[in-house]
Image 1 (spheres, one colour):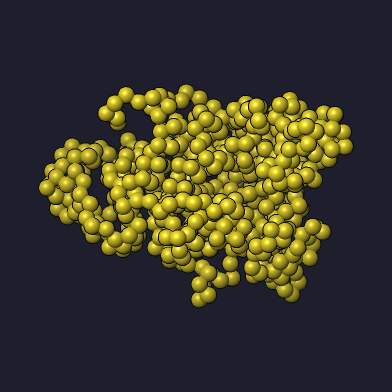
Image 2 (image 1 turned 120 degrees about the vertical axis):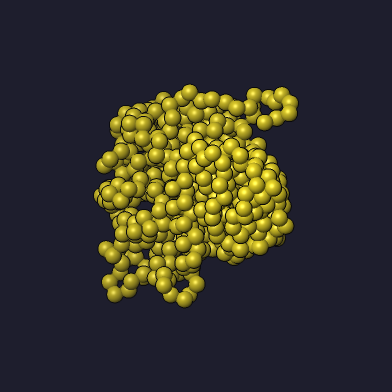
Length: 538
């Protein structure tokens, strides 16, 4: 609500394009970096479990599962720990126990790096990961356990070893020579990285190869027996853009159409985007984005440890440490720029394989990690948990955080597997699944100042009241008339620690970091104070 007229840019808008798949709004995504999640027994060296694999390609530098991640610029991309897709499949129990719905794999196509964003082909799964058959085994078992599998595709570039690029270099004036961007006969690359030549989407042949028909890259890997159920698109904000050319919207719409055809409208399409994405998310292309600008960075400014600069793609971000008022204002401003449906189908995240790990972001303070998880799982959007965040894996920046999952540490006292933190994530994921207000409700701020946030998630069936504190704070008083329900402002008895309701007001307090959630049926004649639905902290 505004006390004055406002431009349409930030006004309410209705989208009439076909909706995203219904399941997506309820989903919780778990991101896996395949090389670092788990091996299967078939690739373990004889007599040396966890030892360096002996069947890797020549470019790879084998590492033991317990080795530290190399942080040297040249060595980091080629250090291979040897995780496999069968290893992921064999660890699905952990994901089912955690309660997530979608297994999101970073790229699985053959490449000359451990991250595989430099694909050498889109026609096969990397044999190092187990090949096509391993992906199909993973998808089949995931489906049996109620999980979906999301793939990761690079539409902005390929690797310099890609078969298309080899053909382009051999015959620059041939068809595939036009599939890559050239500027004054120089091959253009992503951010000047020589191994990542940029695709030219003005070439009809390229776009047809990517998105037209069952044999296209986007369609062939989707659906039952295809390997994936949805796509995340890497560097989507740069795809189809170079100097005076901007074909991003056309690429997004064509990719969306391909996903819909291959999945019968049941595939989700999420784009990587690292800044203001309002120009790119109108509802007819990408269903949503990875919401770095409207969620991740605001959360960083509230929870980062004093004196620490979180890092994204290797670069320190000079973000300040702000109070909740400015954090909420940032979130509201970014959310106002896109349709609600696009916002609620964007992936929210407190970090990823490209960023500082949340455990390091907050200064190795597990209570602050719990606060971050509370925001992640109670705010609008599709929550994405990066593998290992739930056990407290640290990492100063993206590559440093890509550490092998320490399965052998579970149940030991070495401190690398925090069971209390796992239980916190598990409880919040279960809460989100059980509460329509959290997975499908609107968002209304009641209070945001300093150390505290209070907001409502409102759904036709249910209302959720959320109180999040990054530190102890003095009592916060809110007029109870702001809550829905007849008679809600009437005097009620006290509810529980941290919330008092009486004399027409609500009083929130916190003795330390934490998150509390209260829920009640929206059609209740009055808001009846009951013990909180969930509480973690103080």
